[in-house]
Image 1 (spheres, rainbow, N blue to C red):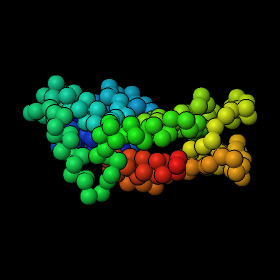
Image 2: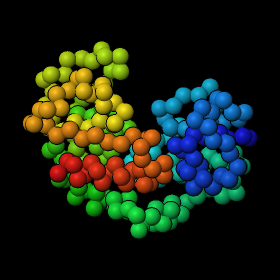
Image 3: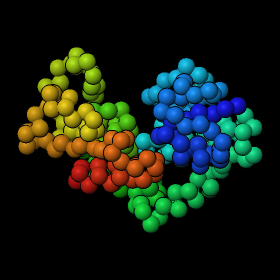
Length: 209
């Protein structure tokens, strides 16, 4: 079986134990049997969709991919939870929040529980929710057919840099009653899933203070 993955998921596949696989932003362009890619991506071939926005999603994805590869006899042994913790601990000199346990995160969640946040982009909603803030019910329509959101109650607005032009059309960034938080997207940040998540958690936690 030929496995194809995207650059965003490459390290997950490596951590899961597979050495021989193809990497392409567009898996269907490769000769392959199976794709491993982010949940928002779509391909014609059989695939396994994963999420790697939060630290828990990264851990779950490593385990899910490894278990699948083992079931298909592509690796000799599936990774266990202790080995995944070792992967994270290898970053101890470069990260802080990636190594937090639930008790430490619960302290952050307690501080953010009353904060209402409007979020452009599904991937950022995962992180904002994980640090305990309230993601208000809002969906961004890329075609400009947004519902009237003028009466939404929120104190923070979070958006990825690639949507800045669209946000500027829809929001008054001069409104000093709200805090606007711009997050670096995939092309402007480390491709390493743990370092990428650490950067976003750190920035959001500090900006929501």
